[in-house]
Length: 112
Length: 114
Image 1 (cartoon, chains in turn orange, cyan):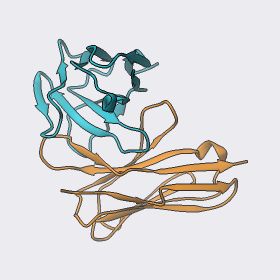
Image 2: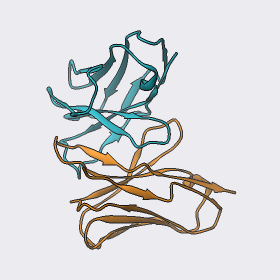
Image 3: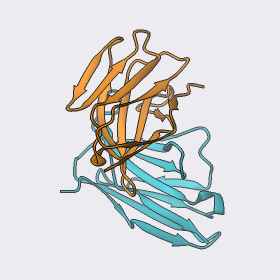
């Protein structure tokens, strides 16, 4: 069974700080996706990384896919209160088409 | 404009009383998914439809059923809800499926079982 482990599980920081969250697995994934979920809402896709070693930037968010395609990281520079939310990584779970498995997420709180 | 709509947003039912959750989409996507997300846990796929083809995950309890009468609508039926079925139920769609295809999620229905 493929598993995605996310760390840390909870993170509370002050506005302006930098942070990194991690998504790790012992399995190789053809791609990984990062979602952000705000309270009471569904997850929203931020990025998909496909190539080992790939780095993608989305404003203050930097996503990296590990060379071996077993892990990924999300780095946020100068966090803002609007970044508060649950950050989920997801990868293919095998089996049926489009079957994503999700990590448990990192719950980020950015205080003003 | 909302693209994946779930109704109701909050549903309260009694132990054992059947309940139906609704999802509709304006994207004309081929694939629709139902996920269960319990508090502080990851979303877990229950089943999905590729057009009319139904795909059940192996560990989805028989208590959960789904219907997709047309491209736009998909329903989740919980035949006899138990206390352990209290969760957020998320509907998602994607154009063609596959793990690099974007899934668009609705806002979810939070189910409470009394």
